Length: 311
Image 1 (cartoon, rainbow, N blue to C red):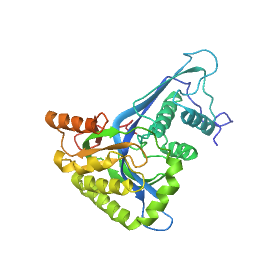
Image 2 (cartoon, rainbow, N blue to C red):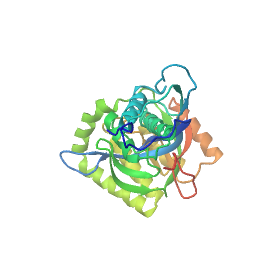
Image 3 (tube, helix red, strand yellow):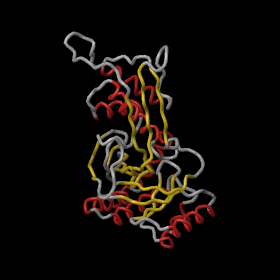
Image 4 (tube, helix red, strand yellow):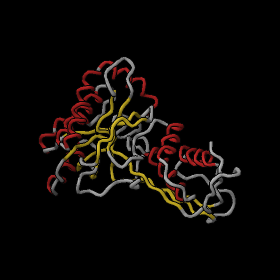
């Protein structure tokens, strides 16, 4: 733990207004073992989406002791760990927060809240952004997605280790639904690990296809691999809408199907933007399954502006 108040410690600028944001995800393009074996690591390729958690802090804006970020206990814990790490004290002030991410459905909402809070604090104290500090704090709080990166990545969510950067060349248009309920990732982890042991070879082939697609900039190949990962996920954490969505993929000309593997999202991947007629057909189809349809641009792609903070 650093102590910036000790003799000889670097000086810290007076706190100022700070803000931070972090994108969420539409589940994952892949979630499964890094490789087949008896003791699998859970690897993910998160599917970033242009929906955000945003946090700001204004020093002196509120009397009395500062309040924790109004995004919940994990963000408050992240703020405390940040201050302890740098040996700092937050002055009285006001937190504000807003999130476009639903909780417990597979949009990486809690991780995005934490990262947005930390990015805000780096600004408040005029400190250089340190991704290592962010990863260390995440590791102390929860298994996490790689939303603190502004590119696709193969990431070990439990070990908080970056395995491979996958770049920014791939992007998709999506149409998806959110089923009712929430999923407790920690509670289902033992079930997932047993499934990964049984189906390790199939997951290994799927991941190889996905990484090859990324290496070639082949969005259609990535979509095919994501579909395989979603089908494998259905064997252990089934989604009520998945069978119908998969069965109608060719009807809608979708390039693939994706899910939040430990969440409640199911949807289509399109390498080209659906026109208005197709969007209407998709909306009617998902409504027939009992859910409203959402549309979002996800991933990156060469012609697309970046997600996140650009750090």
